[in-house]
Length: 445
Image (tube, rainbow, N blue to C red; front, side, top):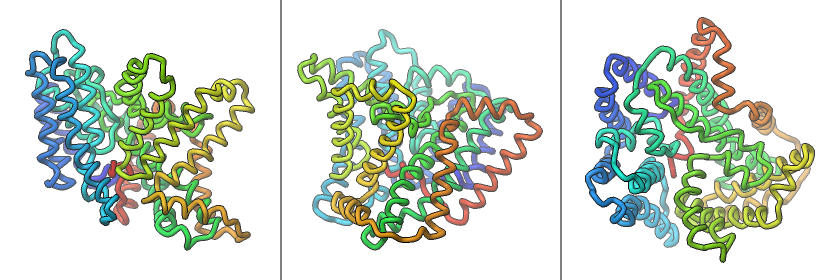
């Protein structure tokens, strides 16, 4: 039940309608059942693992000495993720044909990190103040299940007492949902149709196609993932639940370090709090840059079980160490014109690294780099020009693509005008998506 489909819109309308008649307490029961149904709609085969996560989360509430068993519980939470990731990894090493989507349960990485953050945070509390039902809903609340944002129990669970569906909440979040639909259906999916065959066989295309596809994928993955985040945040907001922002104009960053403060922010903050800071404490300043490298290496492993993701994470870590050691960030932040050059250079570097991220193997990524470097004077095709226009639109409006700006600007338009237009945009995008529904790219992670 993809967010951009008519099925989901109908599902959401029914859930919002029923929820509006229930108390906050009854809504917890209702939304747990609805969330389980939502996850099961993607396939019953993964449902037992999903229910195990919920049971594991609830069981932590009844453990008296949670701090004593913290390491065991974290490992238990990680076990399904490590099992499926390593299974894919070893199959790839043995050259078995496999697909992450077919083997890895949907959303397992996001659910795992959400559960671990709750276990660690609960272990630091002197007294437990969460109800088992609240913990269940925190883990399984359907807007965040498949591709985040990664939630924190201290922010999310207290809000469950205030669940309510009001017209004001729906109207306030419609612009954000519509923005997500446009980015997903009219931009990301269109670019995907162009980049998919090129990344599958890069040596069959000329340098024009390869360069446009490389930059196009940078735009595609941003529009696709930020679109899901927008729609997830908007959907939660309709129930009066606040989700943290996940993207904040990341392509305006002048360094990779800055990019990771704006890109997939909930993952970045999770890695900072639960990986980087503990590593810094253990290194005690003797190995100053090792925590940066290891954190980004773990980020690469989180994204995928193959050597290209490990190399991608390692390169990110190495570059961020260079930025930190040389004072590159401070230098680039000094002046307006220097910063603009830094933004352009950083985007080009990010795009080159994404070729490694997008390619199925390191070997195919090398083929892409080599073929892209063979410059031959050729005319741009109409297809090239169409993708370039889409990319230009995204870049031109990128500085405005953040949650607060979208909501505040939409509030200034009278509802009698904005609501019918927004509903028309959402339904129109759903009709377009129905012709060729594309999964969200981060479903594979």
